[in-house]
Image (cartoon, rainbow, N blue to C red; front, top):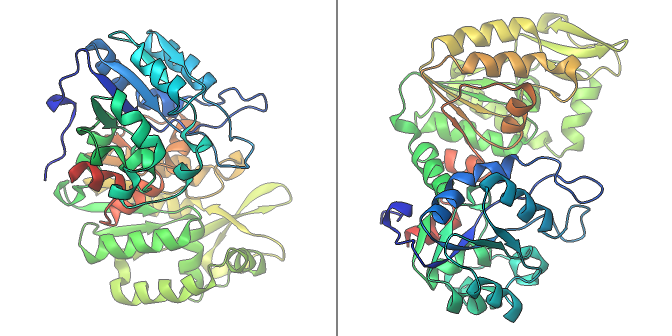
Length: 399
């Protein structure tokens, strides 16, 4: 079934529960340190308010027991600034006070209800029908006319606020959710040839992406970087030194070396490996060709080298579609930011370029790189969609 969008929704005068993902880094004082996730939802919320909706925002912040497990008051204040509209804050999620806050809204007003994860069942996962019978959903449904899910970044979860409402009230995809589904769910229709640049440190997930996109011929070539590349190099018999090998082992990724070897045997030169690496030596960046490895004792691979960047850039220039999924190195340290910065900048020259969310999106914000056709708001959700897996929150909207 097609998913209904805001184009199908009668907004004026209706009370709308809108699930967004504004889980953000916070300062020690509990203020927002980065409002990028809030900005992503401005289009959806602005449209609903401009069309006369009465908007009840549902969202979470942090994990129970964590330092960033805080209330949503600063988020409500910042949303008010971004929207230029009246955005109230309620310190209740679904109690009588929360319901009164929703019922008291006038057309074009919004209220941010309290952190959904302050409610214990929200940190559990349920089938959609069962989620629709939880307290959060059951108590809010009577004061809502419709539900909009715009929280693509959390769409791989099956928590009540994400999958429960579609079982009870008419439900729609917000503009963020709509765009993510349109782009990531249809990569096979993008222009060819397609190159995926896969890096970062989430090795098992990245291996699944590589296997999936090559097996389905969604990707013509995969360029490996980051810890992912290190695992492939180890699988190819390259001696990266004890420091890098120990990191792979300590992360529990040792079995992924065998998986990488199988992928190399299956897909051959469709998977490209680095030609050189960068390590830290005497406080500076030092680049080593593969033939000159291993590095000195204690030196760990921190980035791809410039010979690799040049070779990969040539592949990127010949590609019509480029998908970035994971940084090339420890980009947070400027000494080892070159690989990520230069490869990501090169990708903007492709006919169609996609950023796969998470650390990848954080890196392009760090470097101020612009010009991509789509920047995903999701990390885990984007990975799942790129591998063709179903996302519970998307399926709830579909069903």
